[in-house]
Image (cartoon, rainbow, N blue to C red; front, side, top):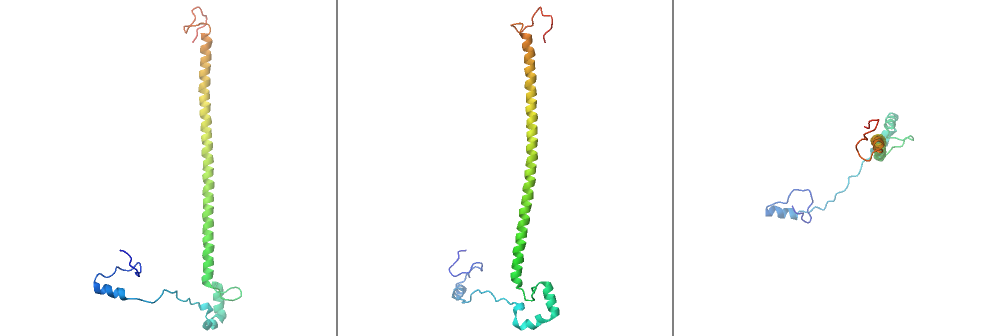
Length: 162
């Protein structure tokens, strides 16, 4: 539905019949949206006699509606402060959780890196052992073949060459 000039979004569709449509377009309201004034009974001069009563004063002070001097506290302002404090505490908790999670992740990474290093060292040692074994076999084979120029064992040799 295309928005027409002067139409308020979120209302029903315009009328389909010509006569009703003309009535709708002819309707104009000069009212404006204005916030209602707030009523604060703690600051109402006509209720001051109620707040003077010691029993009510004690109840109001224990509930936090009166400060230490006995003056009324703006509850909405106090509520906003509490909301800000709660938000800051929630954010601090979230930061602490992230910090703990990051610390745990780093600890796990260190364990994984240590295991990788250990496995890598074991692999290097295994490769070194295989190379050393092959080198020894070559030396033994080279010692046996040093007497002869062929790969066949010497005929008059006293010791068998393996």
